[in-house]
Image (cartoon, rainbow, N blue to C red):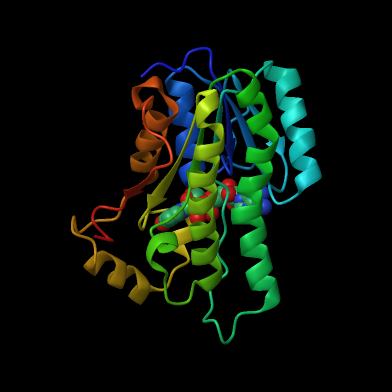
Length: 239
Ligand code: NAP
């Protein structure tokens, strides 16, 4: 895969799956702009990689950040909407704050950066947007009404943007991971992890690298005729 000369934005790229995606795109030759809340794990020594501090749920900040990225890198070719959170609870106990925070970061964050980047991709007649959804956005999940709804929203947003931007040579796809070992899943109770493992055909959890490989493929010319797709990467957790 060759991403030389491409400029990619990866949201939530300071940790977990986003960090693996940013590293993978760099390895394939892209320049990478990481947008995240914190830069504690961000390696400031990497050439062609720059950190931008922002909460993805802030619409005006998204505009400012994308302008800064254009000033620094002169272009944007790839957007990976990866930043996400979970604030789990059953529906009868879920607070407004739990609902709003998850929808704001996961779904509005994806909208914000797609909204700012899509005019650029449209004008240059080419580009890739890859959104990180979840198998729980396809099937629902006990205790995750907010998270599952946000990830289902990302799927509808992906399909709509694929229809709107396809004629301008822009591919828009979503990736739907199953349980992937990360900071997010470290916090899950033991019985939830056992349940997830029991339903996974390959009988193992995925890792961030697995997801990054698929995302890199979707960011490359090898996936030129794929758009509007939601590709599960879950070891057969949801078949
Ligand atoms: P993670 O380790 O918690 O990493 C998420 C990253 O997003 C962190 O760097 C986090 O920053 C950042 N972030 C959170 N809120 C943000 C905001 N408002 N603005 C900007 N950045 C923000 O989680 P992960 O497991 O790698 O998850 C990455 C994506 O994959 C998420 O969209 C998640 O829903 C999705 N996913 C994960 C799994 C899984 O099993 N891990 C499965 C399906 C889908 P801080 O650490 O500083 O808060």
